[in-house]
Amino acid sequence: ETGVTQTPRHLVMGMTNKKSLKCEQHLGHNAMYWYKQSAKKPLELMFVYSLEERVENNSVPSRFSPECPNSSHLFLHLHTLQPEDSALYLCASSQDRTGGVTDTQYFGPGTRLTVL
Amino acid sequence: AQSVTQLGSHVSVSEGALVLLRCNYSSSVPPYLFWYVQYPNQGLQLLLKYTTGATLVKGINGFEAEFKKSETSFHLTKPSAHMSDAAEYFCAVSAPNFGNEKLTFGTGTRLTIIP
Image 1 (cartoon, each protein chain N blue to C red):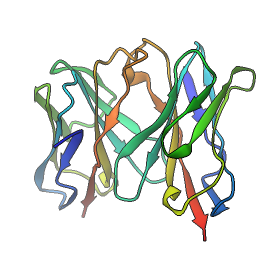
Image 2: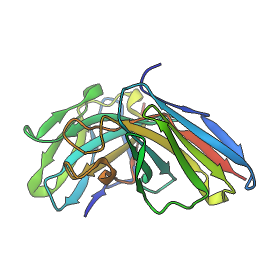
Image 3: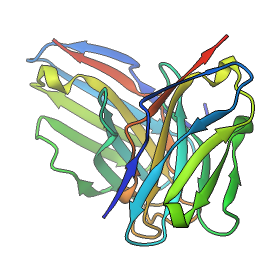
C-alpha cells in the first residue's frame, strides 16, 4: 500500500460507545495530523504529532484521545461522543512539521463518522 | 495571523469551458499557498503549491494558479473543464517555516461540470 490509509472508512456509533480510528502512512514521514471536516466549515486541525510526540492540541474535547505509537501509525480513540461530532475525520502526514518548502501534507481518504 | 477566503461556495461551468476558482488570502509574512482537491468520498489531494520563485504554478490535471501579491490572490484556473473535474476544491495558506500546524484552509468551492 502507498500513501496514507485510514480505517474504517465509515463508522456509526452511539453516544456511549468506545471506538478507534486508525491511520497509517507508508511515506516515511515524521509528522502526522488529525483533522475534522464538517459541512460548510474549514478543516479544523485537531492534533499534530512529530516523531511520535504530540506538539499541538487545538483545544479538542477530552472525548477525543490521540495515540501515536510510532511514526507510521496514528490512532484517534473516541468515547462518549456527541451528535455534533459527526464529521469526516482526515489523517495527514508530512516529512516534518516545520512548514518548509518541501514539507507538504498528504491526506488519507478519511473516516466518515456518524454519532447517533 | 492568516486567513483564506474562497469566493463562491458553488461554481458551475460547462464541459470545455474555462474553470476559474477564486482564492484570496491574508498573511503577515510571505505565504506558501496551496490548492487541494477532494473527490467524493475521498481525502484531499494536492493539486499545486506556490512557495517561492515563478508566480505561475502548474499542477496536476491541467490546473494552474497564479500568485498575485498585489491582489493577495491565488486563483485556480483550467482552460477546458472536463467532467472528471467535478469535486470540491480547497485553497490553503501557511506561514513558511512556522510549522505545518499553521496551515489554514478555506471553506471550499464545489465545482459542478455541466455536460
